Image (cartoon, rainbow, N blue to C red; front, side, top):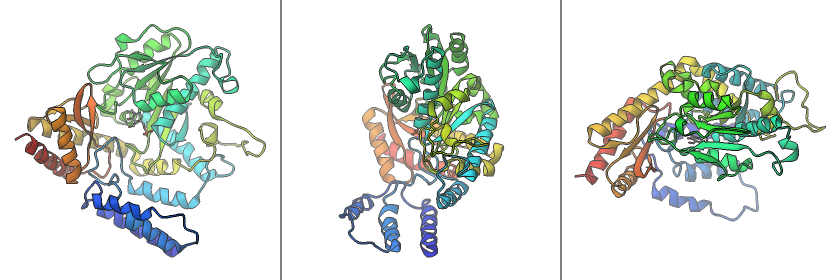
Length: 451
Ligand SMILES: Cc1ncc(COP(=O)(O)O)c(C=O)c1O
């Protein structure tokens, strides 16, 4: 066992050390070699060393260098070395972190990590949380708590009796809500299309002046950090209006919620603490390994009411918090370990510095494009940049050229009718030199298309 695990660690270290000098996207040859894996199910056992060798030989070079410093697609953090190390150790522990009595260390770490996050984000201490796979499930868990609370007020037990015949709940979303939030609404039986869609402005912010008047059980879904522009809905204003009418306000803050940890961002995060629930990711800006996110709910009983299960064989009686009282999953890995390690290592100032640094790099990208004569489509208020290199065809060709070149990797989008390239600076590993090197490569490719 020792030899195998040391071999795996050596291979992982070599992989990470090689990220800076390899093409960010895997080569077509490396991808083509994946077919070597397309074999019939082996009949006989095989040496674990051979299995590991095959995995590394074929898959390492066919992987996208998302863990490296110049991957700017989607919203993807790398893994801080301390979080990867903690992940390895927690993997060895293999704790099914559902109940404190059975897995005290990892259940306790989650409790501490949650307390630290509430402190970091200046959210009320009485909030509860669910450590889940990501913002999609964090939205789901928060909205399950909202559904529980809204229907309980109307005398309806949704977990026991379902939604058939229940009092209707009005769900309000912004026109630029993330599709995963809409998916979560569908999973909860609210219907993906049964929402009231409020128009958004040019930055994707839900227009508070267009909110309909609210009556009856209502959930208003807001967003901190639009996936394309990074913009924040006017959450303070929305909370004030919605709470007057007894509505529940949810914030999808997959990455934007991390602005709460940065004092200089108070102007955009102001009032977010007034909401009833919040969803965020750890695998984005906190830079922990996939997958990891958090639902935070002010009304702890609502989250517990939506999620807790009991059975005679389950050791639910505990002097401390049982993680599974708050999560959709029963069996689950110990996600809090890496979160704890990241916060223990970075500290309050380190988190703020990481967020500020990556936002500064985003502004530098925007500046570089603008000085070269290209149009930046968004106000760069966070870590997201949208740039157009001309018409849709030209922009798509530049994106494709950048992906093939391999210096860095960015994806495309269509933002309010305009085709654009998206840049998201979310990795701890990105340095100023990475930004300059990437900018130079991008502009060279773009200038060739725009002689
Ligand atoms: C605003 C927002 N919400 C939700 C999500 C979904 O997050 P995940 O893929 O971690 O579930 C994203 C992903 O980028 C996002 O930007």
